[in-house]
Length: 190
Image (tube, rainbow, N blue to C red):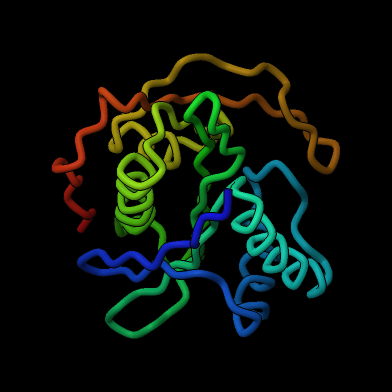
């Protein structure tokens, strides 16, 4: 099933498919060790990783296994990061949510706003029943984003990741369609 990667708009953000022109911004984001400290892979050290990521985004959409969108701030067009749904399973009507934002965009409610728009699209267009997300247990800010969106913490994956020799645990969160509150967009942080 081919699914067109959406273009979505919120009050402050535009979510859109990646283009080749995003490679430098994407590489800068994923090569930042501070941004990537809770990620399940090491920071990128070559720009070609960004080009492969963009190609994979197109392949996922073509195969119907996911959609990743770039996030731009409407006020100035600044690249804020990305969010996406991967591991779509049409038999189970489920997918996994992920997001990463540039640290200059942290603490302003952009992750919540972008993920809310993508979840609305997922439940309405893809008719998903469940969306799952994981967060490193040290990343309380990401856990707060998920809880504001209505996700419920369902458990802990002990020693789930080993990145650069560092072992970490992950929390698993789930959001069920019947618990989704589309009209309850959290107020952005001030």
